[in-house]
Image 1 (cartoon, rainbow over the protein chains, first blue to last red):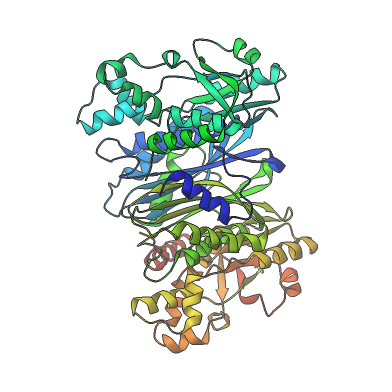
Image 2: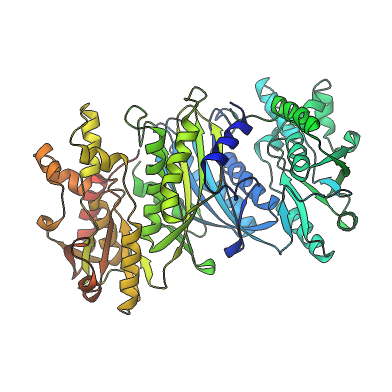
Length: 309
Length: 309
């Protein structure tokens, strides 16, 4: 079954699914954003290619990336860690040192969780953040004329994963982007502050955890307008091009796990952003997505989108 | 490795572990309680003895029980569900129907989560609740003279689990307590309201997810006073005694997963509680736990406490 089918089932089964659909749920009464993401051994990582210290940092960053994509400052995380009995005795300590490395950078606190047995390593983290200001953030907020922006290169993480499959450990830049992605927390704060200062009420934003193509698809169908993307302007690591001359375009668009921010903002917001950190890749058109286009896009998306199943 | 050793590692590794130790972390700035608990196939449940609809209800209740134990009203949950590829196609729908059954009863909303692949079924839920009032709730709050109270029978859930191991499905009352425990949400509200009305500032409370013995151990060592327990007064299901004449006392004390509340309150609070729903099982003594007693208790606890590893 495909991701969209599962989501449809969940939406249809719950009497209120209004909190689903964005990277985080926004709890208005508390002005808080909440998200939960899970990493499963054998699906999201292999213990042969990472270690507890590195893995913990990735697991925390995966969640912080969702908080960043919601325009919120991360404050608390809870951690559920499930481990096989035979796991190395230092795993828990190394893991929590990885957690501490990330959270101490941002002043985040661990507010509980649990530790259970399992046959594989499972890590499920819940993160809570507070909106920087009242600028609305959602996948559906893009408007015609908005500039489409990314915070960094895409495809590198998937390139790193591909290198592992080929038993290679170079180029290191690709491996590192896969094993140690960094949530764009500071960039999120800057975007939110700039939007606020420009008097903009809403921005469209998400992270590219499931690939740049996935993010663009969701932001475009979310607002109902087609996106004009200048693919040549999408930042890409030269090492990715060199290492995968035939596949880099596919990796760039559909690779996943780069954890960059992808957002659509009014031109006046983009103009104030540092062009060395925020890269324009296109414009939101004023052409509506018709039923026929929607079907075609859907097909394309289902065929190419990053899959955890 | 033992539970306490792992907790010591986590406490020592994190620079701030002040939020750990109770069923929920209390986030003072938001007046919110947060908890996360995970159920793993093969560790906490078997798909041969339950189904997605029932399992979902248990998974939600396990988390709501922590919220109840924190004296809070549950408001939101996030759900991370990991499933093997070959799982029955209706699993997700049945699971979310189980979720809906529980949350609709209490007005709780699902605020996100994720769905990933895995080799076993793995359910991690995070729950958020708001304190009913400013009566402090912690495992460390008991005082000499406090009445020790439970909200129901113990050992029944472990009895149900034992029946499964013996390939039996009767008595149904034990099986049901194991498969479909109900968080003591209404009881928590009543306790908190009564404590508030009596002008009591703090109560000691936790749930008996890891066994009555575990709860009493933690509440006693938490406050530093010995508990005088009248074991004959601990409510027990007659079916448990009949089915397991030689083992029921052990199950009663160390069985786990009954998800009752175990709490210590001032006598004046207990006097106002309905004696058909709240059962006195002992009194907090004024005898301090000495170093020697602590060591002995520790040993006892480590030997008998409910283990997920």
